[in-house]
Image 1 (tube, rainbow, N blue to C red):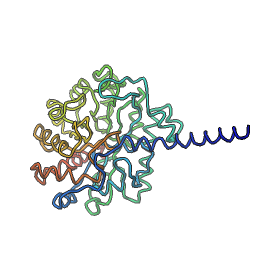
Image 2 (image 1 turned 180 degrees about the vertical axis):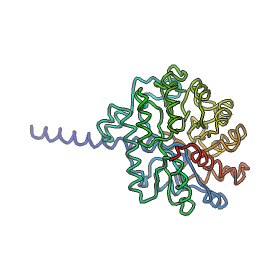
Image 3 (image 1 turned 135 degrees about the horizontal axis):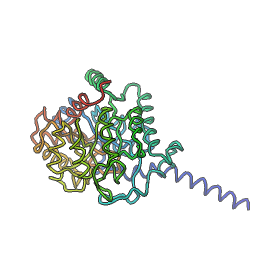
Length: 387
């Protein structure tokens, strides 16, 4: 009996250890690169890259059980690697729900894979049953990293914050600005007042939908793929009144149309592809590219297969070239989708290869500065809340 009890206890301990180790294993399996670091780039490209204010519109690192301030050999980014890649500004997204069996074509809102991840990663118990609490937890996680970073990471919530950061970065670029975004507005839990709670928690970019339809409107990957709901219209008005930027990544085509019809401020798409180089359910056609640009917004080109078909530097540059030729260089940016269960050509330290690709494609130095981060810097300086 005693031996059986000891054996049972050993199995429990091993089971718990395996369960606790599962998130790191999953992180390593889902967030991969085609080519491992270090990354080769020409001396000309590296020199040019070192002059850039690089900004990326989408990273899901907050989802995973990692310390943002530590260097890892898994995933795509952390603060040490962001600094190695010359990234001056990173938008961190809060992923709060993903359907089981996730796919690009058709997902319902009836299941959720994040609940188990929250449990095994030992998020606060309140996050196990509340999407709003998950978003607030991600906000706290980012703020703790900022507080512990000794100035290497700065939370940007206003135009004033942004201007101060740019000035400080110009003197010493060994720092990265962090902006907080939602990956869908299901954390509102159907309550308009929760827009204010997200704003107060530091969220400044609001993705409306993710992989399923929600109370705000349709997803490009949902069941109905519908338009902006009456509640969604209230949400859009409240977001604009608060000075939060609306992100149409993952939005259905009718939802994009409806938002563009009522938006009074610039609209962005944080991470996407363009249908002109890679057809797909969420990749933007020329009409939407032009209408988003007409708001003064920007479109972040992604690095993974759903955005550019075969992930490569050549295809990233090809999508950028198409978007620039369609709407002008002032409306195109980077939107990696790092750490979003994606396979990319490189981790963030490989960004000089994109600079090299843009040089080879004939982009001017001014164009490269705009694409690699200048456009995002301008948008945030113009469109974040004043203070």
